[in-house]
Image (tube, rainbow, N blue to C red; front, side, top):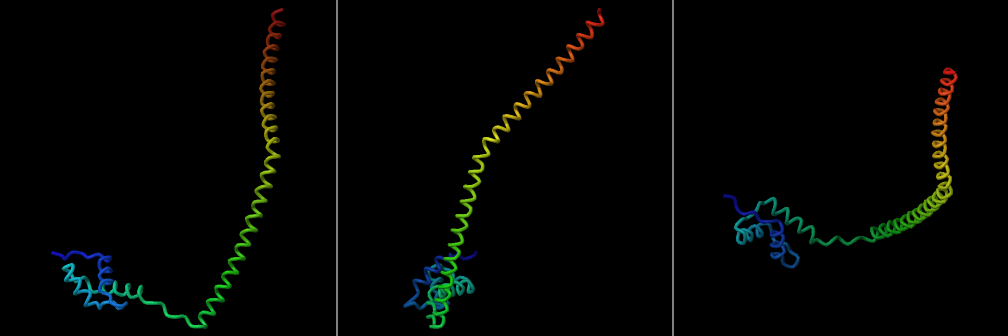
Length: 153
């Protein structure tokens, strides 16, 4: 039968509990404490991986040297300037396209009545075409009647 699985979270809590003055426990101490508390020593690779991640989290970053700080300040200044330039470009871009959209809206407002007039003209032309067709049909019918009447006489 397999031993119970202990979660990473429980092991990390145990690591914090066993830590003294920012000194992490050794792998052997941690595995012994796990045997006593959980009845399982855990895998060696897993335990040392969790210890390494706890060590990486607790280790303070090394103090930067003066040359590094100067380089970082220069880089920060350059990034701020680039950000200001990008912000200025974005504002100019937004202004340009707002003007373009406004111009197109005005153009649409002037052309809308013309589109309505064109639609009305097309509807009128269709009506006139139908009336003309009906007139041709009526003329043909009347001519046929006239031809029949003249042949009957």
